[in-house]
Length: 258
Image (spheres, rainbow, N blue to C red):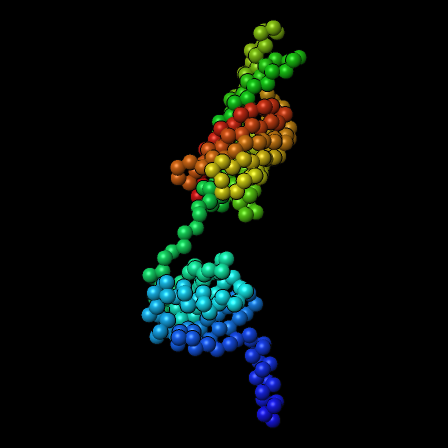
């Protein structure tokens, strides 16, 4: 019976890899678990040590242990120590008895404004000019707007868009000088290349129903540009867009986020 009890005790000790200590009445027990060591100390004596004294004690007690981190359990408080090249240093400490109001809030880096707010409204101005070889030059001035939200961890957006513009066709050789209005309504999406940066490049594509000079058709505008956060919940957007109605256009706009 005694042999069975002794074998069981040895099995439990090997399983938990724990060993008791009474060195200088500071360390009560050392327990190893995977790659972390827990040192249970006597709060009455360990709390009286200076930081240098704690450093010396922890370094002495763990010099034969081939692990990197040590947790010191001191009643309701604790410390995290780290071993580097044989020496140890205090990394962090906490006290569960302190009220939560005394805890220092954790600072989290802020994201780019355009990636913090899911809903947005954009208003822009567009300027385009098409100078084909065999037809008159077309100059376009347009007002452009988008309203939508950010999707997929803020790396994409989806928006409804609308455009109303003024076109002027000029050909000196053919003595042509005509004015007309154009407009479109549609849906588009943009994918942002960088997340949370000061300058956020994007590429976009959409589908619009456009009317220009008495003719209507569907068009697929494609765009490439960048979003630059500015003061407040807003950003400046600059992009190049192409579609078969307005041809090439430079769009500069302002986006406000809710």
